Image (cartoon, rainbow, N blue to C red; front, side, top):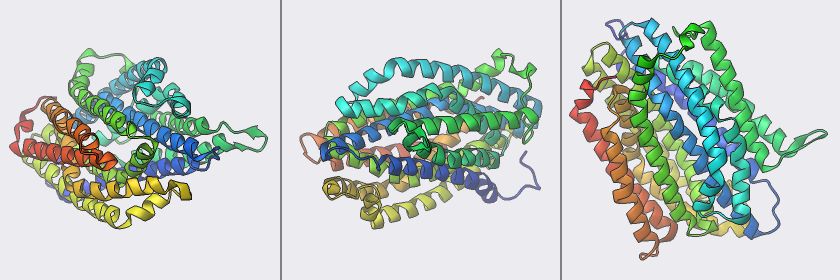
Length: 456
């Protein structure tokens, strides 16, 4: 509970954000390792390689949808556990954790069924055909099968964050990241007499590492961790608590899934520009994650501290936590933007090492430099979205997301990639414009303070 003897807000923000930041960057290292590993495949000709890189971009987008889907459980779990902790009700926090696990399992199984039935049609709708579509599906199917474990792992880590513990999440997910690298390499190329599975082995390694993380974090919570503990009696469905989790998570999930759907729409526009543009787009996104994930870490801190402070009836401290998290995140992400502007070409050459891939480099370097201009607004969007969700104010922000995508990004992307003829660069101009519009709206919403009266 917030109290007189607690450290200053800035120190608490850093104490929560830095482990989450390390966790996020470990996963980025795994993602970049997977991209590097996938880059080692020998393909018959340059056209096949471009199709392959385009498939990686689309698979990455669709896998990113998983993180949006987990919001249906994780946001409400963090917010409700943090409210109970802020109010000193640890029994309620433990019961909420158990209900979060039940929801995660249910949503995980539902997601697996939907993915296995709908992925081929979705990949086709995104403009991938032939070998590119086959590569993409071979990567996604193993991940879909193991989805319940990843969502349950995410829900448990979210509950621990609500209790003010991001270090356990770092240890567990850091272990997942470390395990993923040898698993992905071994399953891809084979070990000893065991034959490798190729491209799908990379995804299977990722899925199995999350399965391991799920088992570990469930074991920790079964024994008790950071004041939270899961018991068998607590796993009985509790309608009132499930409603309270979903009261926050469903609007947040609608927001995240709406963003994911619009991102896929945007990807369809990019894929329509050809394999070179799609490949360059994917590599830019990989590097842009250096900034995006930093914002996510400080957003985790903001969500937890805002919710805990409101649970302790201290809205002033909640507001200070949100603004402090934003200020630090903005500084970190702006520094990342400077790196993008200065080192864009060397960063692209990490993945585009062949002479015939120079068109990918030429298409992508300007977009990486352009996104550097959006880092302050992206910090606002990410941190204040998380802070508002932690407060339980998850409905109005959905409208901001729809306005940004449907009113700015999508129509502007069609205009700039079509009649204006700016290609991939035009699509990223549309993206940057959207980020600035949404960043401004989220900052104004948080500054207005109506979230202080939201009910969780």
